[in-house]
Amino acid sequence: MSAAGSSNPEYVVARVRARRGSLYGDEEYRKLTRMGPAEIARFMEESSYGEEINALGSRHGGVDLIEYALNRNLAEQFDDILDWSEGTLYDLIARYLRKFDAWNVKTVIRGVYTDADQSAVEADLIRAGEFDDRRIRRLLEADSIDGVIEVLEDTIYGEPLREAYAEFEETGVLVPLENAVDRAFYERLLSGLGGDEPTRQYEAFLRAEVDFRNATNALRLARSGADIDPAAYFIEGGDLFTRSSLARLAQNLDELVEYIGDSQYGEELGPALRELEAADSLIAFEHAIDGALLAYGDRLGTIHPVSVTPVISYILAKERETENIRAIARGKEAGLSPDEIESELVIT
Amino acid sequence: MFEATNELGNLVLSTGGTLTNPSAAAALAVGLAALGAGYAERGIGSAAVGAMAEDDDLFVNGLILTVLPETIVILALVVVFIVG
Image (cartoon, rainbow over all chains, first blue to last red; front, side, top):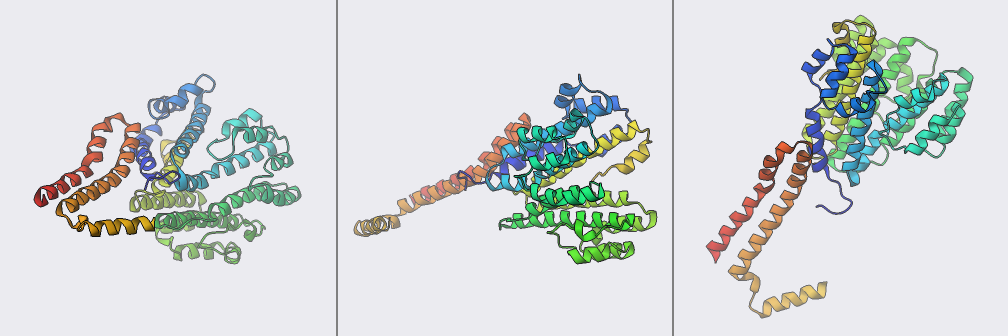
């Protein structure tokens, strides 16, 4: 029943599905890979990115223009979704969109670490999360990592970052800080989810995402052969790994690949795993993971048409689209051939 | 609340069972059908408005789909003519 405070999935899903239809498909990507940066910008201007390209066109040009337009469009679209949704639906979507807070925190930390220009960092932020403009401004004004952590003191990221800071000071690498942010986000993501069937499916989807993230982390560690404790990078909440099994498997790449192959994700990730063994390329595997997650989200969206799942599936697809366009633009800038660029894309 | 229900029950019994009266039952049937149609239209309507907000061309489709559950009320009206 429609009462104050209840959720309105019908409305949000109808709008989201309409927007989903205007995302780029195979055909558009094929065209884009054959264009130069200026042509890509013009192509985007004629599609759903027109407003952003026009707003930013006078200040930026080339690949930067594309990049900023993509970020701004992403933030706008996701803000819209949060605007439309009410009640429990809002809570479920906001949970997921907090990952942009995590992204912003990581970007700011990287910016401070590399002494980047404040406006350069600002352009890379995606303001789709929960942080308001004031907090983002304070984050941008912080001139040391300690300062950044201070601004975040009262958020879920404060404490984990504080703990990771000691390790950062010791080693001088950003990995512990970034993992602390990721972990804080994922642990919050899965806490206190309520009980109907679509929400359980949503939870299963989030667990799959945690599993995939753990698997990529473990593969990266196993591949790099670095002497880092894998358990320290474990994210709670997944089904596939436990802290100790991840630590053990990350020691041995072959065992890890076999373990993932035997798991419930084996069917979807099988081809990518074989490729990983043959070509020794992590990129293909990471793309396969993204693809599998997209397909999973789509399937859930079809099974429960009036719930949070189609919205999440749209959010994923939209993110994918911006990443694809970014890859095309950056690839063009670096002078890659259309075929090479196409291998970088994840298209479902 | 409960006292009111009791009183209503007593009233019904003393007036010779209004609710077992065929006309009253038919009216109730139409009312319940309309309630069901309204509930169905709530979901369809909000989805239709959402779709229209994205694309104006969907107005006609949205309108048709929104009023489709209304047919069930018309079918329920048939009951009135059969019983009454």
